[in-house]
Length: 307
Length: 327
Image 1 (tube, rainbow over the protein chains, first blue to last red):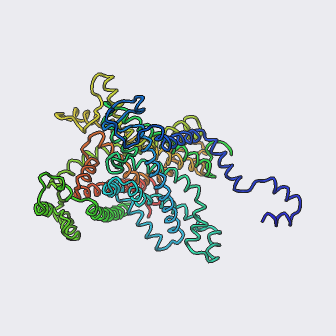
Image 2: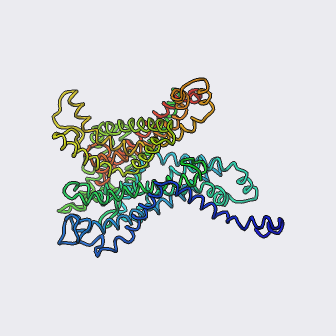
Image 3: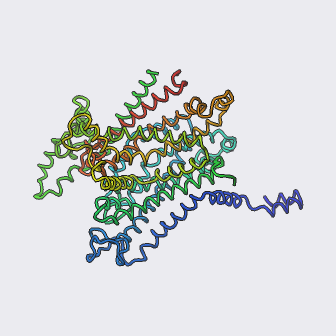
């Protein structure tokens, strides 16, 4: 492609082409520049990276693991032996916290990734196909929204008995509906575009049109939703584990830790405040990142100056 | 208008019936009342377990469709929602708890919407000024504070306040004190118990409306008809109030219905922490005690609350939006 332009237009265009960067690089640099402009978002990335690093390597810095029990220190406060204190059964809160972050983040990222993919596909295929299929899909979504999903989640996740892999599946199955409806509204306007019509007349199948032309065009929205989805999932997981329906002992997540600590607010405050502050920092930092991404990716966003 | 609302109510009623029945089958599949007898010491003989379960229509040895039919006919004919594995009537439980929950959720729902919309209007008319930016950041933070953390922080703050004042002003547990007599003392006592939970639900819930209302109002402030109103000499505040706000509030009103399940979820956690014996607390108990009939009743309550929110928002939209009135 580049060679052809050079041959047709001669030297002037050639030197111009040489100076401009490839398109994709320019775009990502623009996004980066716009993202960096948002100071809270940058701070969010900083906090998030710190927490994620803590989750990944924090556990290796001490010689306790999250399930080790130290019978010599049961329910003791922060000390040199146990940096964040121990629980009533002698588990090291620091090691549990590192493991809990890992568990909560894994669940959050995986669930959000899958729900985003499912809702993008379902929403856009419904909008693209239209007619009866669209109506049926919308009815199903609407119906699932009436069913108190948190209750169903608790019902099902309680019976998987704290198996976090099954919890992920359950959260995906009951988590895609609302966003699928949002995607549907966005894809509605895309299906009328010329390039979608062109692709259709070229004989492309519905799945291919959706994959190549509709989903990439709502890509920035999907990126933002993915980030927010991590927050929503972590919140849902926290709620479930807090009530005792999600991740269960011996496994720990941030929600389970908070649930354990909540009854010891005054007698063992370290058991509550360390996980609580970490969880809040995690969700808030992710939300600020999502905010920054929205400013950076959304061409209509006018928040904060020029690119 | 009345016809439109009636049609919507009918549609929602159908949805509730479907959702409740679906939950019955799900609950029967995932909750196992038989497990309640497994840990009994001395062990209960199987025929006794069977007899007990059959008595309350919970025996998993009977075909599910059979049980479902008994369950649904009892509801339709006698409004009897069944019994827990221990034999406690679901009707009795729900009858008292429903009012506790209503007190808990309705006030918070109304406040959440009012505060969110007010903040949205306030910040939209001061777009990109310091107050707008600060409130925006504050809302991002509050929206993402997990409910258990917020509720427990409220408990800590309430206790600190009580210690500071030397007497109990804000109660951190329960929905009312025992032995309160008379209307005014009762009301005061209720409010004292309600403040902390309501603050929890409102703080974690208002920002959705804030963002939505702000974005929608900003779209409308720039519209031609608002500019015309300004050109005719209306002040900015009047132009927003009379022209931009009524149009932009419609989608917000619609979204209230969809936010109610979220408030209910928040209420489950908040009721657990603040020790309110409402539907949220009941929900936790039913699931951990394998109480199929109770869990289904909670699901029905949840969808009824959603439907009430949806119908109310339909009414509001009908009042605000002339296009709906005409059709």
